[in-house]
Image: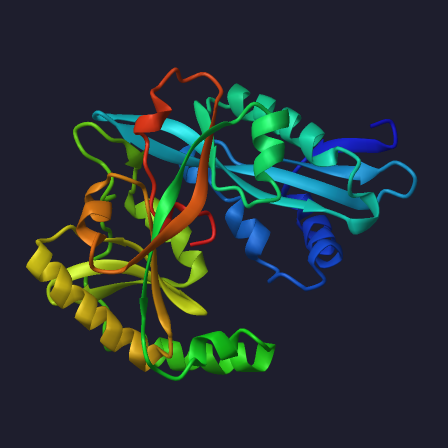
Length: 312
């Protein structure tokens, strides 16, 4: 690591993050993306992230960060964090930068009172987290999907900037017909035995940077986002009969929004998981992993839904 300098992210780092994003992914990110995502001061700590710079020319070459959340377990609320963005400049990949950035980030997180870190790694980062950084693999979520026969407007819109802008206007108009007056849905995974991400009005406000919506399903509410498909982040719990009616309404809304699939990611053996079984196509969902920093909590009892994903 003698060729690199590690610096904690500050507000002055945002241009460097945008430049690194362009180099790593070949596309621009919106100017306010990292400014908003780092703005977790409503929970106390923020900017729990590091950037690696090349000593030779000062170029930002790698980044890793975690984002504070709260988790409720058996009536107690704990400060935790979600493992978030990872970027490496293609000219500096394969040099162990992610591993070293992660180590200093976890140290910083612990110093700021973070009890544990959770994450939903992809196939590429999963072996790094579990084999090199000591993360525990818990399970894969259950993935549920329903097909909708409609024009694939939402998927097509992702193919160009102009189409995204046009679809965003259409979405804003159409979603207004289905909006719920609900401003917050309690996390459906939390029970007497299971913990989950604790939601407050401030948390919902923080998340709504990503254009998600509360919609009405015959008197019950769902928290949804459109990203090529209709993603259901979470729902109010209901009876089996109410759920069938709610799913019918979801299909109607997806039809008008041009979403050819409705998707859930749900922790196994949670109330919503049991409610969805037999009503939608079941598949293997995303990985769920944890790194306990100082909590000693039974992390297998902490469950998640799609709304907990950092980009929902």
